[in-house]
Length: 120
Image (cartoon, rainbow, N blue to C red; front, side):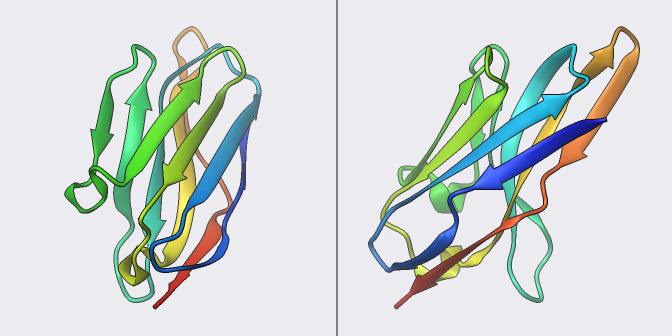
């Protein structure tokens, strides 16, 4: 079992910043990709950003230049620095991790979600 615990959500005014953090724990052999997804009311869950073990990153077009994802491989943590927040960034943000519990034993785990609300 691999658990992901998120922190850092909250309420902020448009133009403000928030930093989300996620820590993975449990039976972990390796983590290939860690990332953040979000789901707004009435919408599908979408990728916000992810980062691979080699450092490669992907960002949704809507957050490029405003959000930055970073990762500490040794600590199994991932952070999302969100700047210049907009009301349309309001959503529940979920941490995700893909990796292996042991050789030939993959996992794909989700956090419980943290609410981010941006007021106009």
